[in-house]
Image (cartoon, rainbow, N blue to C red; front, side, top):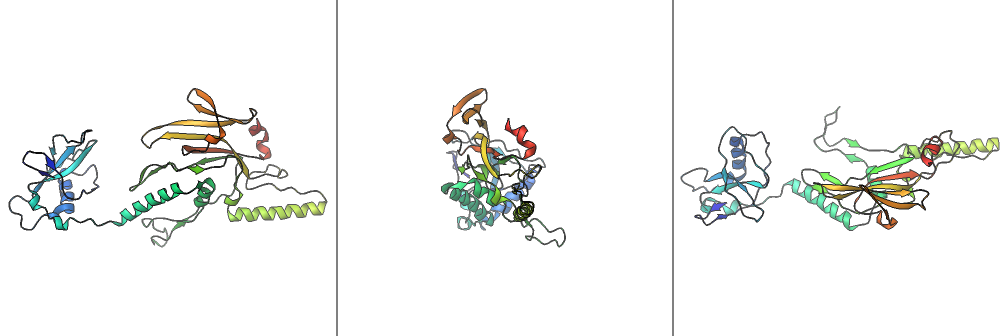
Length: 321
């Protein structure tokens, strides 16, 4: 920034984003700024060095700036309030080397653009809950910062989440908020989640599916030997006495919706009332109103509640009322 003889502030050069801790002294901040812009000072500068001073400016709602506050080289940390920025006011733009003011994209920029691009790509495609569940069970390589406890090697540790057993009541919490160094905000992608017929069998671990297949063969063999029809308990859920066949298909009976942004919003729930022709109702604080089933699936869907069509024997009475 340069002050044009009292005619107002004129900004020039490439803005830079500098991260520093809140406990750093003002002198340390001066050093950090110098490491970022010191190479932009022309070699033929004479007189005061460096040819700039650090100021704190507050941006008003109308786009103008308030009176600057100088950042002195003291042991106290600089205090930046809301809508305030740190600027370097140059004594003269002639001291600024424009030829060296080039932008070199850090590798973190590509990572940030990749995250934004992936989010945009998903928003353009039909994103389903089944796809999200499949991604949830994929193998993930931990970051380079994570070291193996034994060999201390980086980037070699992998993690994977497996589902071994399925409950009668399945609660799915979708990731609607992201907060990283590069991307912060709410994800408003429309996830198409089934109201009826969510089949969870494909998302069980391979070992669990193999164990179920072996159990089925053993039950069938036992039935043939005794001459009685064999029944097999379903996926990973507690089958009680093991005689009742369990279906790993789920139906949605309630959902929590978040309306708003990461900074604030409102929660509304929708619920299907059994016995009332399975009609859906919206619960918004004290207000309860009927809602069309077509409105249940929306970008505001946040927490989903599913119930298995065939309950385990232990929960038939508890969950059927």
